[in-house]
Image 1 (cartoon, helix red, strand yellow):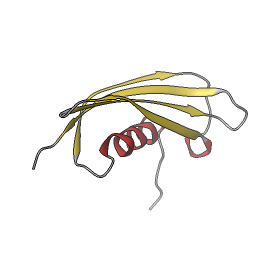
Image 2 (cartoon, rainbow, N blue to C red):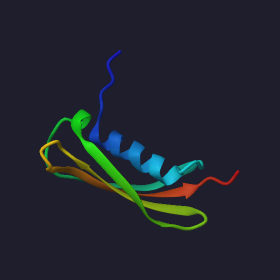
Image 3 (cartoon, rainbow, N blue to C red):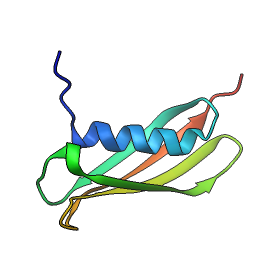
Length: 83
């Protein structure tokens, strides 16, 4: 079985992992702005938490191609799932 990578999927996973930080989270909002075209398997993704409250985490990230061009930027809001 071949796994097809999408840039949106790569960024969504990275944002979710950053927001979770060991907790269970659920996406509330995801925004993706595309830039240069390239192979999603070759991008370098960086993410960071912009702000966090008790119930929400705001995350931003970007995907860069090997030549330094920005493939996409993304932002997301995640709800912390209370157990």
